[in-house]
Amino acid sequence: MKRTATFTAASLLLSLLVNLSALGQISRVEHKEVYCSPADPNIDSLFNFACFWESRKNFDEAANLYRIIIMVDSSFCDAYDNLGRIYRMRGEYDSAITLYEMSLQLLPTNGVALQNLGVVHTLTGNFLAADTLYQKLVDLYPEDAEGYYGRGKVRLALGDAAGAIPLFERAADIYGKAQSTWLADVYLFLGMAHLNHRDFVACKHYFELAAPDLDTIPFFQFGRARVYLMQDTPDKDSAMIFINRAEELGGSIPDDIQMMLSELE
Image 1 (spheres, rainbow, N blue to C red):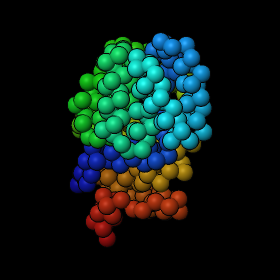
Image 2: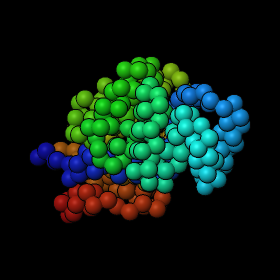
Image 3: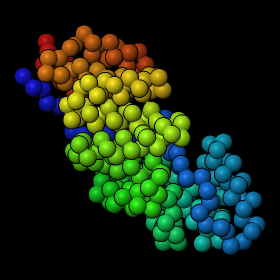
Image 4: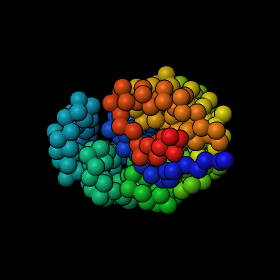
């Protein structure tokens, strides 16, 4: 008998994002260039100093400097972006949204603000707003992976696994050519999309590709266990290999897996 997932794509996606956020894995920005040249040339050194403190994880000092920069030069959108990133990492989403929107008012084509505002809306479950932002990012920067990657996560959260898969594939192609360290993340989401689409062979394939980089993450191990538990003929023994590994890494068995295991007793 066909087994259906006991989780929703949206809840699983949000759980994954929270896990990756805790590891610092969604705080990246692929766009490295400065989007707004500061009106005051003296701002450059102050901005670099703020970036230094942020890179050293002294976020309080960095945030204070970004606020000073905004007071001195209110047109310098990169300061809004970086301060917004600090608020986002702290979970202060309303403040982050305000800063990213102010940045986009200054420069509507700002890829950093578009990407990070999409991340915040995804984290807060505002998937339609995130979808619009990521589509704009794709339109503006078709050779950048982030728009496709972000839209793929949104489509998956909305239950459109079939629509998510080609978006993730495009992101994986771009990341692969660039030898990006974030390729494993895309493989993980590709595996999730195929799992939601009940293509277990493809799911296992992408999880295997992600494994070298994500093997120490409990959430990833639980994801691999789901593949075996959701099959038409569940394979509890194989699933337990990954569940045990996840617990060894400090993870707690999610409710949906507990339910699937209890059904097999």
